[in-house]
Amino acid sequence: MALINENYLKLKAGYLFPEISRRVAAFSTANPGRKILRLGIGDVTRPLCPKIVEAFQKGVEEMAASETFRGYGPEQGYGFLREAAATHDFQAFGADIRPEEIFISDGSKCDTGNIQEIFGSGNTIAIGDPVYPVYVDTNVMAGKTGPVQENGYYENILYMPCLEEQGFLPRVPKKKADIIYLCFPNNPTGATASRAELVQWVDYAKANRSVILFDAAYEAFIRDPAIPHSIFEIKGAKDVAIEFRSFSKTAGFTGTRCAYTVVPESLHAYTQSGEKVRVHDLWLRRQTTKFNGVSYPVQKAAEACYTEEGRTQIKNEISYYMENARIIKEKMSGYGYRVFGAENAPYVWFKTKNNMSSWNFFDLLLDKAGVVGTPGQGFGPSGEGYFRFSAFSSRNVVTEAMDALEKV
Ligand code: PLP
Image (cartoon, rainbow, N blue to C red; front, side, top):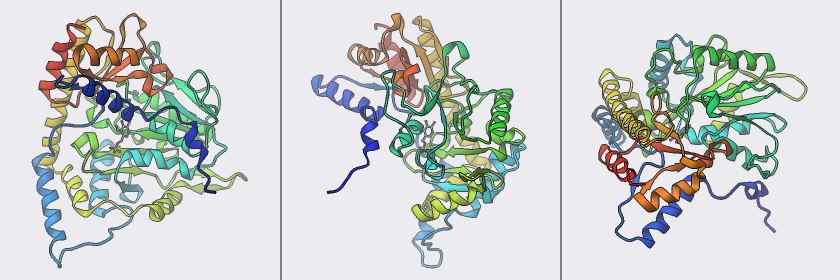
């Protein structure tokens, strides 16, 4: 008799986005011909930039000639990409990250989901609420939590409510947490952490010998020069943090797939008996056993993001999306909603009116305006009563959706 991993049965209903797709599909079937305006899932809509496409194509051509063909690549990723990332994403900001500390991957979803494997099962895991649901769900799947409770929280997770009155920022826990997930700029609230706030987290992690898992998938959307792009801009963070970066939103790679994770060589965690172990070695072992790298043309395409032309082109795309965010924020504020985010992140987060539940609000918008957003509750119990619009749609969809909402 084959036994299943019963931890999967502990998961609350489907993953958020499949549930949204299910409801939208049911609506379309019931209302054939009704136009749907999608501001829901955070998927980009603009094509890859010309400089990236050129490098991508050149990479494919190299694969087509016997002199330049490549099979399996280096397990951590090609040196050209790791060097470019270390130079432009870290050293340029004063963060001393070396190419050897970078692991190229096919996505931050996999990396943020897989990283828990290399940590033990007795850890106290602190996770913000609301936040990208992958951190909680992957810990549930791995059996690192208890069952879900009536309040929507899983047992054995130390939730850090990110409430409106706190600017949607998690507070440094009073209790000791061993593994801490932070996501800045935040999905879904768009909140960012200042340098002083990140210093507090690094100090906390040092004092408690904890590891911070810092998801910076949206760092490219930061506009305010005072906000750090990387946790490694904070002194001492290399001893306590791992950082996740993705080309998905930065450069339109959601379908192309490329990301990377920085695991500093000076980061340590401990055995039960207190022996210090280099986390870098464990992640290397994990990746070389379970992952065979990202294709050469994709890594060439990602490298092009760091050329002067590539950077200019990417910046223009980001400005396009951020203008969408500005329009959504302005319109929704005009309709009387309390609106957040949209300044250093491609997400607009707002409070529903009359405390309507976020799934009821989802159904209302779909029914009355054909507009799809994301219910805040799907990101955690503290997201209840809030709603997220993504700025990744085309300008036409954004303006049409905003007009359609006028009548709701
Ligand atoms: N991290 C956050 C916070 C995200 O919002 C997303 C995607 O929406 C990801 C990671 C996944 O990125 P990738 O496309 O690199 O898997």
